[in-house]
Length: 166
Image (cartoon, rainbow, N blue to C red; front, top):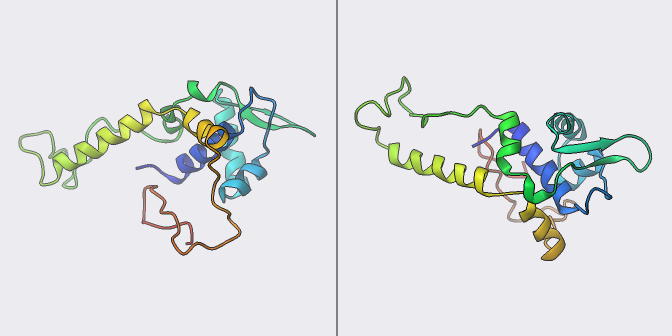
């Protein structure tokens, strides 16, 4: 569905949304990386892109760090996704060469259309406010990264299927 950079960007913005208090609380790239189980250099690079796009603001020095530049309910998942992914207008047909959409669709065309529609619904219908509410109002916390889980969460990023235990 999306690549590693997009996954990292969504993870970083969601963490900043969790602690959003109007911009007073700031987190460093290292703190975000540790909280989300990511590599700090990757998070730092992603935060630079997000900052250039006006989604986050950074402040150097002691007491510095990153915070959202807008309220979480003003930032859609699409805003982050669009920075790192190329939008495909057509459904990606496994036969290639534009077979789908020309005459009859391939054997799984309708299922691919449903997947694309579901992705669009998430991208355009979800703001980062859901992360703020889950964390601040509902008290939901990320799993403790110091313990190995018997049932690790599956990542839904594009590429080979993996778990966070990999």
